[in-house]
Image (cartoon, rainbow, N blue to C red; front, side, top):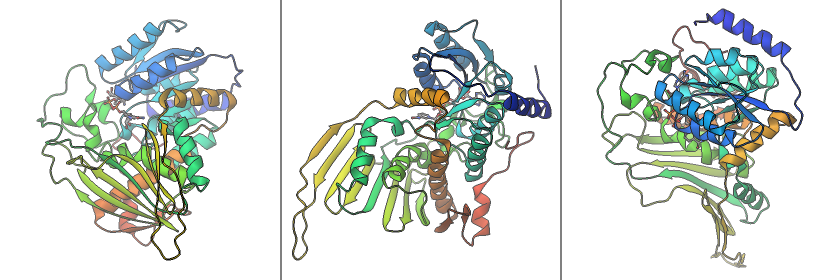
Length: 425
Ligand SMILES: NC(=O)c1ccc[n+]([C@@H]2O[C@H](COP(=O)([O-])OP(=O)(O)OC[C@H]3O[C@@H](n4cnc5c(N)ncnc54)[C@H](O)[C@@H]3O)[C@@H](O)[C@H]2O)c1
């Protein structure tokens, strides 16, 4: 079945107007999965563990992943009938009996399904990074607000109790005055993720629909499943991949919405496999009275990934594995030692808590832990880091106007061209 765009959007908007059911605590939540790849299925499994979730539909453009998503729904044994399978997400969004969708597609396919789902009166659990561009993220926030939808960004660290504990300690002043924070993704992925040649797409993949709004390209498996992360047309490298997790926590802990300026440097210096995004990237973000450094390093693992918060009294290391605080020694004249003892707290589960928080908010209509606007603000920081590096100059950010100051060229990078017939909302 094919649906033309006008019919799709007008029926979606009509549905939104008529479909504002208020849920009770014991109501079922009927869910569809769009993008049944690695992370989509990982989300799906956790959704299916919750007793009120009824799986209704699975959508993927790659048949083997579609089947894996369907199999998970069947194994759960909680469907109220056969779980429908689709290759075109618009057919999932058209269904009036679906309350919420998971968007587990690659980044270049986050905004369009999320906005369409909001228009159709559905709540959305959209994987991180929220968007491929700054303007897409803004359109997603606007759609969520206009249609009064719950939209959770898939930055699950926001729901980890030990992250909340760390945020409380940081905001409570335990580390003293904080003027420097570092966040990083460090590993040695040498020599890269392999090379591949352009070829005919596999018969069980709709490559045209996989590309969607991205430029037309010959199929190459190193651009497709999982590896899309290393290409600018579909994603933003580790800056958006892991930056979307740890920069999100830093913003939360430091109670910061946006930096004033960004300067980034880096390139693809060592990896020889297919891909475009940098293997080394250093980004400096200036806030009024502190500085954040983001580091991507894919070619040497001597340093460690995670967040380090430097305060005048103590330093905190914060990762998924836990919290470690070590006291500082002052060396200035008249030094009075802050006397912070070493403390360690174990890591806590995040992903199922994040899914649970979304489901609770679907019922309560409260903002979820990683509300779309938080996902947007974090994505803005990641995108600015990439724009600065790619342009080779520092940028001043006007958060109120959502513009790069005095740089028309750079502002063009806040959006992108959409291949026809795709458009934003
Ligand atoms: N929260 C986390 O910790 C976490 C971890 C991994 C990935 N992610 C995010 O999840 C998203 C997917 O990453 P992945 O590693 O699962 O990739 P993947 O390639 O394994 O899965 C993506 C799936 O989407 C499908 N797809 C592509 N276009 C589609 C379309 N138009 N309609 C329906 N299905 C479509 C693909 O065929 C594939 O099955 C990314 O945005 C990534 O950043 C989040």
